[in-house]
Image (cartoon, rainbow, N blue to C red):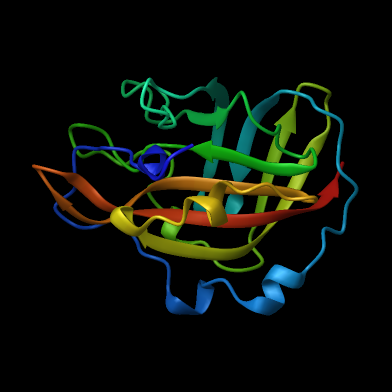
Length: 192
């Protein structure tokens, strides 16, 4: 996936979506944290829940476009979360990636509008087709300028079950869309 894969163009609000605070940034100690749960076998993710921001959304696989950028869920479905269907399945060993709209073309909030308000320790649950739930704990929330998007850090492989949630963020212009991306880094900590 390319750095452009992270850009989701929305309609833009009069106000910027919430930004993560500097206290939520990646830290060496967070990076060293090992998963507390064993990787799960592959099973399609069905639903994503983040109680801290009131998200309870269905999931659908998305792929890459001709330029190698991650596709987003259909613009007409702002409450849908897309997961990279050709990559790691959430809960399995590796880095799973999910994306959602921050807003709609008319400026209404999308499923990930409040993603920037998550804090370290918040819980993300993904219900899977095998009737298990992969439970991830947020270890960092970052805002990256899309021109300096750290693709390898965000999309790079891992030997532990990792999850990245990505949406638009930061400033917005009609000409270029959102100028940044919010990225949540989370690690599998339980499976039920």
